[in-house]
Image (cartoon, rainbow over all chains, first blue to last red; front, side, top):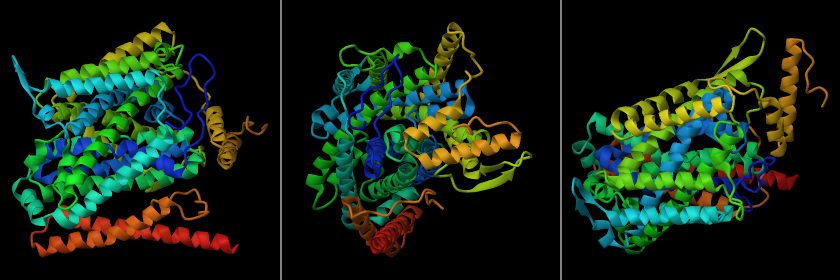
Length: 527
Length: 80
């Protein structure tokens, strides 16, 4: 979170977040979130896609680039906190806004558990006894209760900190992200120069190739190494001149993260056999770093320390993201205000923090009784993220038709201009359609190949839909249709608060032209 | 293709971030070249390593190009 920002207050007028985030701050905010993913994803993807892990990352990366472009357009056009849930609400209406919201809430809840487990996995780089410890409890074989306990302690500690109103400063993210970039770059450069053996990679690529199902499973898991882009759109409400800054930082971030993910997978398989990495799912990058000549002794430890810190930050982002998202949902009457009850002393949303942290503790416990804890959590994480992204693509496409008047400082490339009967021109996003097909196919792959994700994911959606129906009926709100909202007024207010005065004028002019074409007096002429 | 539509203001001064971008760009080109040379000299070509080599070179050239454009904008602003 940016400096000075605390949890939004409820029951009063909506609080404006301070616009304090610069170009570098926005970039690092995203990087501290997305950049951490590779620390958790590398081991599980290599375990699934074996010698062709770089291909799995490339397939997921292709989808991710399109998701990234869609988020760049939407977050620079609608610079408000809320991310995918807000875009779906505007583009597809209340019900689908709710579905996108719960899909992303699911992701955030898993995010808390997954990154807490991964962070403690890197801590265990220093504690091999804990890492190797396992017990057999009746039908449960090779359970590691110590690692499980560590992860739960981390989640509880982070929850308490959030209840006390911890502020994760933008400066902290900048320093941590910059340090991480330097370390990761050093590992890649020295690794490729001194440790990488192209013949080992070629051998594994050729003779240790996975089956098609394993490759698809690996690709659907690899998508988690790119999740977190919505943090830039979450930060949009706190970014200075978002229309100018977001496209620049977002595009750079997309390609940086992609090149790092591809580099690490290619480097890993040229340094170590995939089986060695697969058995060290908890700390794969530290293992890789410690195998680099000259710097290995120091780099391994430093990477483990940095990995633990950055993953801890990501876990904390999950707690903050969930409470912020549920606040946005409650504001738009998609969820009960119970979630936004504020702790009187610290003014933090205690109920949502406790609810989602509690759920992540349960998930952590359950995942530790499965054979591979990180794989199980990643399995679930991919379900929520891909479902949310599918709806974001649909919103991108629909908003091009229903809201062509909002200025778009950045547009997803590859558009076909279509002149409608009323003379207005729609730019149909071809990449939006391809991206939708790609992410929907990934979601289907998750449903088909993820044994746990295909049960718990739809179950979560079903339970939440029942809750939504009960909540909306109780409050005499339409269940399947939307509450009428003045989006035009909201858009003017959002752009004004972002100090994008030029865009406000452009928007008003477009609305005036539209009304003129319809032969009605525009409400915006008076202003 | 990926250029933001909003005009980017000229830089006021060279920042650490600019130096980092240029430094990384300078590093990426020889790194990409090394990966390509080592891959091709091993006589067993995998698409992943060729792609990585080309990606590093491409990204490095792009970073240097961006740095050059920003420097030109800065020089023009100073001249005005």
